[in-house]
Image 1: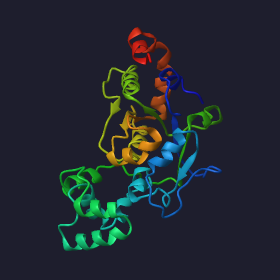
Image 2: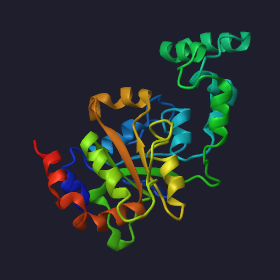
Image 3: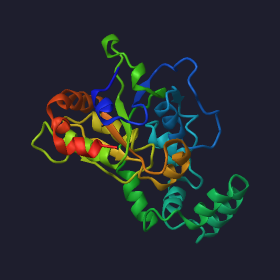
Length: 271
């Protein structure tokens, strides 16, 4: 499938189709079980033209397992959900149990151990992380696989429809997509920028949006850790714009008649 919008915006990277599937694609890239990595690397591979896949044992980390919609894997984080809440905020080193566990984790990764002990500082307190965690839309049933592939490989005429389509965009492209997502509606909330991990913002949260009567697009790659992980692949100035399939099709339909044919947009697109 070709995207009218992607052509008009002259995207640098391929649009990525993300599907929850019961079937593993043939010859798809996949992390080895137990490998520690960022699942956004799989996304970046699809943005560069390759198909990638993850199951609940090959997401690269506990956060990736949760972020791609395989359930509340934070239960399996070192120290459980409580350990994760400290990790994301002010650390776990203030308790004897947390200090001992954090020092043991140094054998796995010095950076991970440091964050576990002292925190990433992404929320003010573990309690705030816990409240955020408890509100996440974990699915009742997890898929067998989550598949990332170039949109060009999707065949809607054969019943092949992904759950989400994601563009990798710069500031002007993002601005254009925000306007377009609100073009055919009286509402002004067609796009959200929630706090979350890179994988949550292309997976878990857009999956949840897809179930809404009026699904919203989700702006992502605002996770500092994910940006660091894919900086080499995607560059320093890009964000993601994830559209549930229904919204993506509506925006594609709107593209020929909207501001794309006006001078303001043309001026923005000039090199």
